[in-house]
Image 1 (cartoon, one colour):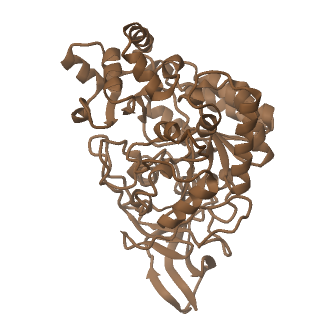
Image 2 (cartoon, rainbow, N blue to C red; image 1 turned 120 degrees about the vertical axis):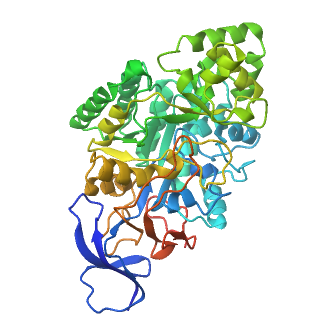
Image 3 (tube, rainbow, N blue to C red; image 1 turned 30 degrees about the vertical axis):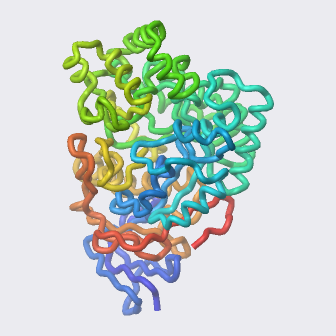
Amino acid sequence: MFDVLLRGATVVDGTGNPPRRADLAVTGDRIALIGEAGRTEARTVLDCSGLVLAPGFIDLHSHADFTIAGHPGAESYVRQGVTTIVTGNCGSSPFPSVDGRDAALTAIMAREGSDEAELTWPDFAGFASAIDAAGPAVNLAPMVGHAALRVAAAGTEHRELTAEELGFMRQLLADAAHQGAFGLSTGLIYAPGSFAATEEVVALATEAAAHDLLYSTHMRDEGDALLDAVDEAIGTARRSGVRLQVSHLKAMGPANHGKVADALRRIESARAEGIDVACDVYPYAASSTRLSSRLPNWALDGGFAGLVHRLRDEESYARIAAELTAKTGRTFLPEGTVLAALPEGPYSGRIGATLATIAAERGRPAAETALDILAAHEGNVWIVNHAMAESDVDTVLGHERSAIVSDGWVLDVHNAGHPHPRHFGTFARAIGRYHRDRGVLGLSEAVRKLTSLPAARIGLTDRGILAEGRIADITVFDPETITDTASYANPLAYARGTEHVLLGGRFALTGGEPGGRHGTVLRKSGQREKR
C-alpha cells in the first residue's frame, strides 16, 4: 500500500519533456510510481484530474534566511508550490558571525520585515540548527555571503584587505562549505561588498571552486556599465574555475534597455569557451532594493552610521547629492522610485509614494529628498524601482539557461510596508501570465525553469525532477486558475491556483490551505538531512 496516490494528473516532470497523463504514488519520502496505478490502494488518495502535477518549485534566489525564523509557515512560498529556497544571495547571509561584529553584520543584512533583532549563531551549523528548531514549511539550501565574510574580517571599512584578512575570509568560507553550504554569493552593488576589488572576489571564488560551490553574483552594475559587470563576472569564473550564476539579470534605466541581449550573448560565448555560467530573472519589470545602493562607495564607508554622519555634514551632503543627481534620468528615476519600507520616523507615513511626488511636495530636488529620507531613517530605506523594460524581461525569461526566481523574503501578508509583489506572485505569475496568458513560455519549459534548472545549478541531485526513487517534493496546480493576485498597488496578496504541495511525501498544502511544516535546512555533499 502506498502512503499517497495522486490520480489522473497531467504530469510535467521538470525535464522539459511534454506533459503526459499519469498517476503518481508516494511511499515514505520518495516517489514510488509514475504511471498507471490501477486499483492500487493508498492511505491518502486524491483525484487530480484536470490538474498539473510538477516537482516542487525551487527558488534559486531568496533572502528568506532573514525572515524564516519569525515566519516559519512561509505561506507566500507554500501557496505557490515552492518547496525549496536557496538563501544567502547578493552577498547577504546571517552567518558567519564573529564576536564584536554582530551588530554591524545585523545592520547591514537586516531585510524588510526581518524579525532577526540579533544573531544568535556563529556559523552555518548554528544557523541550520536554529532554523530547524523553528520548523520551517520549506527547505532551505543556504549559501554564504561575501559581505558577511568581509564584515567578519574587516568590519564595514572601505579599503583593500590585508593578506591575513583575505585568508581569514577564505577559511570561513571553507568552514561553511565543510558544514554543508551550497555556494558563495556577492552583492557588488551593495556596501561593503562593493568595496571589494576584483582580485578579492577571484580569491574567494577560487576557494569556492575548490569545494564545488556555486558562485552567485549580484553584479557591480546593472545600468550604464552592465556589460562591463558581466565581463567582470565571467572573468572571475574564467580565472577561478568556479560555476557562475548571474543573479536576476536586468538592465536598469531607459538608456540601457535592450542591453540584456548583449549580456546573454556574452554568457553564451563564455559557455562555448567551457565556462559554466547561467543566469536567473524575476518576472517583473521593477526591482526592489535599498535606496542606499544608489550612492557612491565613499559615502557608505563605515556602514549606515558612516552614511548618516556624512549626510549631517554640509560639504559631504552636497557632494553625495551632486553624484546622485548625475544619475537622474539614467539609473536613478525618482518618478519610478517608490518607498517600500523604512523604520518608524518622519517619512514612514509616505510608504507607497514616489520620490518624485515627495520631492514636489517639499519643493526640494529629488536627489536631496532621497538623502533627507535616508538621514531621517538611519540609512535603512527600501524601495521598489520601476526602471526596467518588459521586453527585456521577456528576453531573459525566454533564454534557455535562465531560471525564474523571486528575490524575495516577505513570507506572509501581515508584513508591514509596501513590498514588491514578487514576494507573493513570482511562481504563479511565471505560469499564469508568461505561459497561459502571454505564451512567452511553454508549460514544460516554464516548469523546467522553476524546478530542474535551479536544482542543477545549486547541486540538488534528488529534487527538481519527478522520477521514481526521487524525493517526493511535489506541487499540484490548476493550469486554468493559477495566478498572482499581488500587484504594485496591493502587494500583500497570496497567489491562487495551487491545490496541493508535498514536501518529502508529507502535505504542506492541501486543497489550497497550508498544512504541516516539514522543511529542513539542507546540506550539500550528501550530508544527511534532519527530518
